[in-house]
Length: 238
Image (cartoon, rainbow, N blue to C red; front, side, top):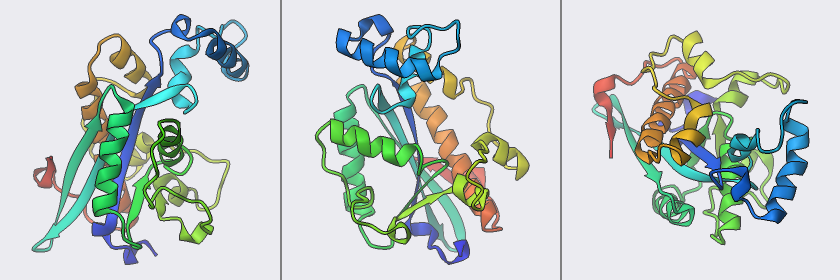
């Protein structure tokens, strides 16, 4: 039961990803061919591989992580407080190394948990794949080799909402509306992250957007437990 989970042992997280190169033409010939093969499955009839290259960030083989934002709940005198922190860098190896150092130091116990929205299908495997590509060892909390399904230390608000309905997808944005969770209006959305990174060169703007999703994720999880939301004055950024 969700009510039995220790909130202070959960790390809430969200990632932002972009294509590995600014444009399709910047890829070497080998990866251009690989992307052309991939594009056959995602492009509409009139679209070329170049047209859909901005979507490359969705795939760990063609994208990279530029931001991981996390949130941790601490309960002080009965009051829930949320502390946010973002790891963002043009150097993905540095970003992942710093993030994993935090996981190894603070989320390395058997009762530690990661929580994301669609995290089991996207965020967690994406992080693991990019770590392997970068030659970085996985922290225990992300290393699923040999683990049984019930031993995996991951929570997913999308899976919790599905209740076993595998064909159904519900966005975090829709769920925050359904559960009347106030969210600040963003100047960007997920579809704009690639442009903000490669054209505007504004990583900080991406981090702010990512942090807002972590807040929304955390509040949604509390709603799933029928608990009060964390007040805005009790949310801080490291």
